Length: 341
Ligand SMILES: NC(=O)c1ccc[n+]([C@@H]2O[C@H](COP(=O)([O-])OP(=O)(O)OC[C@H]3O[C@@H](n4cnc5c(N)ncnc54)[C@H](O)[C@@H]3O)[C@@H](O)[C@H]2O)c1
Image 1: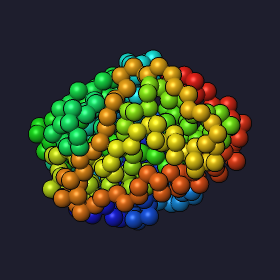
Image 2: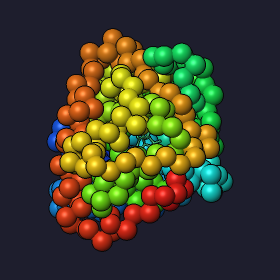
Image 3: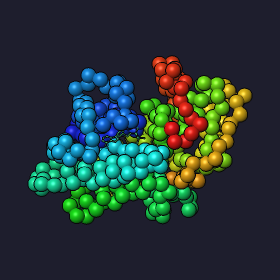
């Protein structure tokens, strides 16, 4: 199946990864409807596409069944990536469960309820974007798709519930679903603010403000960072692969980097090696080690991301410096001493 000149629904398409995926889908000639409640998504993220007749943006929630039902009826592909984030799962676990788990079930139900087999056959792919957080910390590495599942947060557990609901619809309704487990992404449109703020932009915001980056824990925890344009490409290519229907596949660069190394690289690249990294107590449920085995993706699609952390951070910095210039007060006021905000 080719994801080209198709009608596509992207939930959470105004978010970080979603907006990068929407750009790619439109470049390939697809017509895209974004469903986003803009709780953390931003108009800015889609500004490069403003006025493009191939993009329709619907402001609403995946929890609104009638709305969702009206949007899934004639699409060929659904990329489901609407989410409430990990750090929020400590302060508002019920909301995280409702959006991530119940919201996924709602969307799946809309794809099958009351549809004739014919209407359903127009849906060629339901792509559930899960997360490496379903694994918890590595028990062995690299971590293939059969690695034990042991989420350490309500967020990880809610993402896993979404996976199970998705795969159950393959068995019960023959819905052509696949589950993608991305590891950490970074790059343009990444959140630097509030509970959604991610480590790389938070470090960069502090350094550009002349303050030392803050690490929660000893900094030896690792993540497998993927440049977001390649996360989006991996998602699209995995969705096209017939062999992956009913399966789960990792999307990642395939190398682990410690958080301390990220801080050091950013200090060097931003010319502030004079700043001394600060260490604060670790965040609860923090995963110690993430390192993806990406051989299934490579074997089934031939795709492997090629942007290493060094050149990816250069591209990230290019984008982030422009953002900083555009809204210095906002980024200057980022509160990063607390992992919750
Ligand atoms: N960012 C990463 O490094 C990473 C890593 C692994 C997996 N993922 C997964 O990738 C997907 C996208 O993540 P992201 O980092 O782009 O997140 P994001 O927070 O930037 O985007 C999520 C989007 O969902 C929207 N949303 C939230 N609740 C909604 C609701 N009820 N109805 C409609 N829209 C709603 C938000 O407004 C936002 O635009 C998620 O499913 C996430 O679990 C992300």
